[in-house]
Length: 424
Image 1 (spheres, one colour):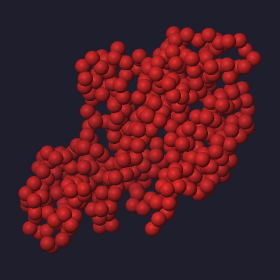
Image 2 (spheres, helix red, strand yellow; image 1 turned 120 degrees about the vertical axis):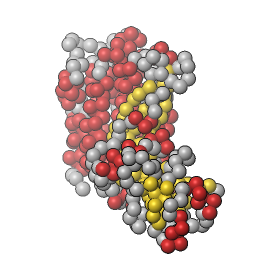
Image 3 (cartoon, helix red, strand yellow; image 1 turned 90 degrees about the vertical axis):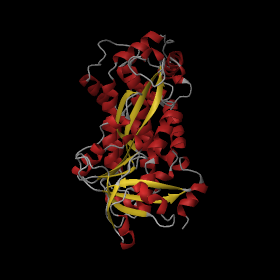
Image 4 (tube, helix red, strand yellow; image 1 turned 60 degrees about the vertical axis):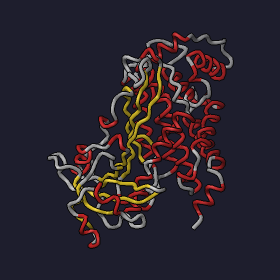
């Protein structure tokens, strides 16, 4: 394990005023003159706004939050007057790429400090990603930019490549909500990666790309896909070779999982044979396509791997309902991206504190409640906001230590859940 103090120092350095100002210079958003709402102040207030109930209800609520924060930051100063126009200009002019750069720096350090988590069969892969999307409504004036499936409305689709190992989004792409999921580019040439897909991402070319990279996938089988069985693993299934899936479904025994090799299509784009497994669950057959052929991965294990895809659904619920990202107030693309990455940074900060608490207590990451931990992070940030401005790095490091102690003590899930985790 790395030196824990070095980890604290690294996060402190990344979020220091000096480093953030250097990064802001790279993206051309340096303050040319002294302003009430500097780049550094605006950055932290946007991060804090991601966790304050009601702030995302409208621009006036955001203005009120900023003004109240200034009173806490500068108690000896005069009352600050900030207009909706001033904050609106910031949302439009401050490049969202700056916020993304901060997120990526934090993410890189966070992933590096994580202990290797065995998690049974996931340990056979370098990493495992769930790829999915979620729709968020935006102001209707953006209908031409972010077209919705509903006329007269505007909405964005948040495509996400979510790491099941680190429980964080490693790639985010924002498009109009009408764009089909299959166009998301989340596959890399890295080998030994596991990808988990929902039906929206079912595509022959994507499967071929993963196989050629030396990686693996598990996907549900589309109902319109009727693969041809070309090989079987057990003699009693030999008579199934040469038949279509639709021909054998009525003959399947609910007590015996299906495990065969199939060809999805006769088209040239389908170069490789794949594995089709099926289990009978809750009164229906569930079919999954994969290129994992090792005997260690039984049909039940393949199903359990696919269940891990649910972590990305939990992530969407947390950023939309715990961090209130479903209430985006910006009326321009840059502002929308600033709001999205502000929420993602707060989400990542919470995950970082959970990871540090996990190392402190020895409990796995999954034993911690994101909602409870986020509430503690929010309380500490809002009551110690002045500590981010004009104070030493040592003060910030001390703040982080105290926050980790608080999450270690009060961020765990219910005792009933923990008893279930420890039960044989």
